[in-house]
Length: 511
Image 1 (tube, rainbow, N blue to C red):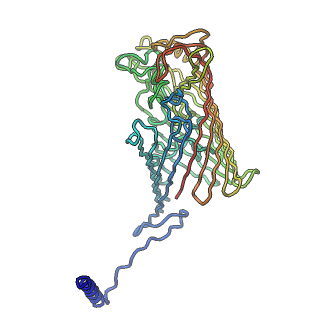
Image 2 (tube, rainbow, N blue to C red):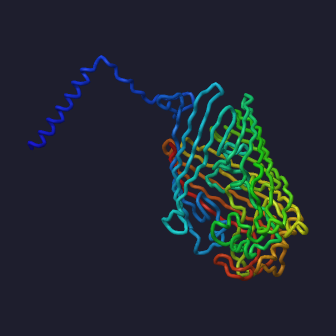
Image 3 (tube, helix red, strand yellow):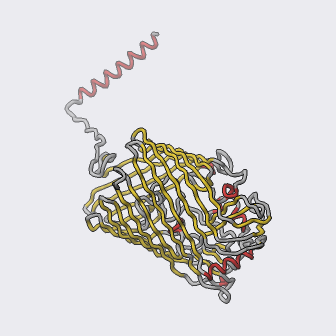
């Protein structure tokens, strides 16, 4: 006890000594403490960074969701891989937990506001190769850009896209039928504001990560030694290679980027909604006719394009806050502008059948097709056409409940020369043997329809449930003997259209 008392007395003496020293220095004024001040110029949530005239806002969300009967997180349909095969290796449910963090800064200057914006995500997704391993963990940089005097430099939403990107009213990240770069795309762009909600933008954008689908050389078998050994299994089997695999149609022969995509748009924002027209030019640049031999030559470079019209109607007669968002997109030699930047371009779905072991629907979207092994027998690039319509009706039942009904239709068409090249190239793949009633047509369509209902019991906390149906309408017919792929045996299969249901449950807290 004496020791404790001694400690208290010693502490008190020290405090008195400090206090005496401060009292002796009273004539000197202490430095003012700079407190964080609210910055109301740019809206709620901004504060001045102490000692500067820059305002900063921190935000983000934490999201937990589960996809049912899908091929991945965020309600990805079971349209490829193990889920498309409907085998016992597929996960009937896929969980994802994600934290998003963003930093927004604004500084007023004589040239206007200088803005920086950064958005990153940290995710853990079930269904990786080894449960609990780093393969399940993902870190993503969605946005990182600077805006100054009308210019945007860095990773931001494409100038081609709409304000709602790929989400006219859905939760799923896999509603195709239009452009989608919700994770941003590297660009240098300029936007001019003309007043009364009218603006126009021009942009140079990097196509390498999001906007290159495939360029198929149908003369090079995918099972060729030294080129690739994935072949049929990579197109319709298991693993991440299903997303961009050349698969059955030929060898994927995109070359490196030489020219960025050239994008422009005109937009009108009004109280009633939005109207926008966008256009993009996309270079198609193939590698060599023989992939491992530069002296074999290559097709001449060519250009594709895409155009989009978008309309948003707000506060429609069905209720306050209700809206309709819709886009219509067409592309020639630029299919990613219609299928979305993050969706797969190779689809394979199995089902039951009465005339073979099982039925199958497969489809692949390419920007273009060519053939040949050298400059003498090689052809030019035949471009692929695609078009899509995507939209949603969003209704508020009351301040706490809302429902959206959404859908899309996507069509991919190969011209006659490209179709003939693909059908001839299919025979290069070992084990692909047409049977009774067989006919070849690589054109396909995908229709999707779904609905999501959201409950917001308190501000910025939303619980939602979504269900979606996806139908793959392919144009092959008859029987075909296929090699083994994934867990599927080498046997006869019947071509038939396929449909799949998927669902999603989500809880999200914004801050």
